[in-house]
Amino acid sequence: MQILFIILAALGSAYFLYRKAVDPIAAAFGASILYFAPAFFGHIKFSKGYTEGGKYLGEYASTIHPAAYGCMIIVLMAVVSAAAIFDRIPVRHIRRLPGDRFTPSILALIIVVASIMSIRTVSTYYLCADKSITLTQIDSWYYWAAYALPLCLVSAVVLRQWVIAALCVLLLGADIFVGFRVNAAVCLVSLLILIGWMLFHGKRSALMFIGIVAIGGMSLFVVKTLAYNIKSIYAVTCIFDDAPHEIVIVGRSDSRAAVKQFARAFTLGSTYTDSILNSEPFVIQAILNETIAQQFRTPADYLGKQVLSAIPGGATIFGLSLGDVPLFSDLFKHKLFGDIPFGMASNPWAQAYAAGGYMLIAIFAAIYAGSVGALGYVFKASKGSLRALTLVISVWIAFYFHRNDVMTELGILKQTVYIAIAAVVLSTAISGGTTVFQKLASRRHRA
Image (tube, rainbow, N blue to C red; front, side):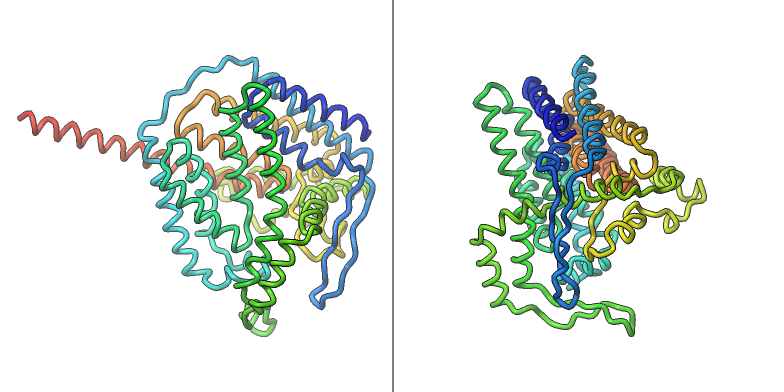
């Protein structure tokens, strides 16, 4: 099965090189290859980390189950098929959104206001050395700022509003510093697609772009380790106090020791190799591997509740209590990886297999590839802010679907779409108001 997977991956790569088009569906194929990377090695191995007392827990190591290759093959075939189908649809250009030049400014305003409000409420907890503690303190203001950031940066680049783009880059650096790289990944992939859409013509340009993508992809793995070491220089130590049931800041880290640790990590070759071999794809595919190997199964009805929760007002309409709708990680973590202390994100393909086997994998893959293909069509047919907003939404699906629970992914998409719609509506209103004001001023001038 591994040989079949490698052959199909090679044929798929050849097809996308033959297309000479860098768009969301090509990104979906690239993301699939990236997250299925352990399949090329044939085994998965990563560190389980340490206990709170500092005891090393050893390593997880396993050979990839043959059925896991089958799941990956279904996904690759769905993505290639979607690309072939949507490539046959003639592109009919979509008119620019009215007032789209105001969209980056509105998104920047949302980010700045939400960031200020979040800093006021979360405060020093952003500097906690333990990211899991920071996550317990983060408020909704952070998520408004975080999901608006890629929309703002990409739309600013598309519309060449470089001051706003520079502001977004600074805020992105702050986001990475406090321990989050999700937005950096979404921004990087979105900008790479924009560059590739313009550059991917001819062998030299194609090879140059592939090199840029390879370097960018590798940097995402390494930056996590280096950012952690940089943050440790300024981090504070936060602990859970069982008595008052709250988080207490007990002191700052040793800055001198942290600087030495960062310098050592920066120059140590193992920092870079371990960043790849212990990277997210290996942890994510361990979930699929163990779900199949241990024949872990879940009821299918909770998936329906997860989907309904994404409908605006769905909790009220369908009488759902979101706290009662489990995430897939709530179901598998303690049964399959009870000895691993850190969070492992999720795997939608494992979630599908546990609830419905290969049939549900095929359904998930068709929805995944079809939605990215449809957004890719809009990307190619549109210009200005609509192209930018569509691109960011498609990247959230193309890349982040691979490591999220269905409900988590739908929640991210819902908030991102809300922000995008709000920016478009306000941009249109401002544009309309400006036009009316100019007409009135012109009439008064003539009178």
